[in-house]
Length: 273
Image 1 (cartoon, rainbow, N blue to C red):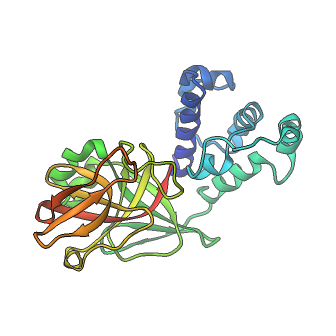
Image 2: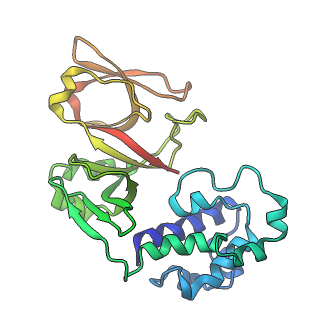
Image 3: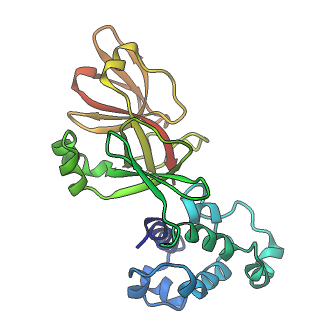
């Protein structure tokens, strides 16, 4: 099953949790068995009725979030005229289901992308319309111990962890890894903050650059250490070799950590939540 369609399915189930409805009941209320929904068929032409029902029943769903995971689950303000006439809108060529089908079509088997792989083992999928997606290993913060055991052996890591894709605007030569955050230390309701459960794309910062210090970044850094994995801002590199790690949530105070005990540092490039 195409990974992008799989993510749409996951977000539909996430929306059921947001609405406080059991996943199986939520799917069955939309006219499909839970087993078929979780199966391998794509949410394209054979399941367009399901998407019609989903978007008709929940017109407040944020389409950008449904397609890419970016933004809020629901639109900030629902246009009542759209809600009242959703059935006619869906039938229009530019309707909501059309947008999802267009996104899904990009990943149809007939639309084979060109696949490139950089020296770090990251795969890039270049589609006919110019869209580029990068496939990276996904490391949940809670799986820190497993990652530490294999982080320097890419073959073993690929066997241990699943993958995730992000839409990017160019092909990079660095080492990119995906992470799933846990905890609210980088969440303070700001535009560049990151909540717990977000998917994060990070580009590794080479150790030869660490001695130069760390500049302020839009989304912060992922720090892989001997004792934990953190998403933080690095606000200082001290003469004794410690780095000061700061949170964006004021309830989490900054702390110092020996740079010698840090294994990897990733500059956060993108987030999805």
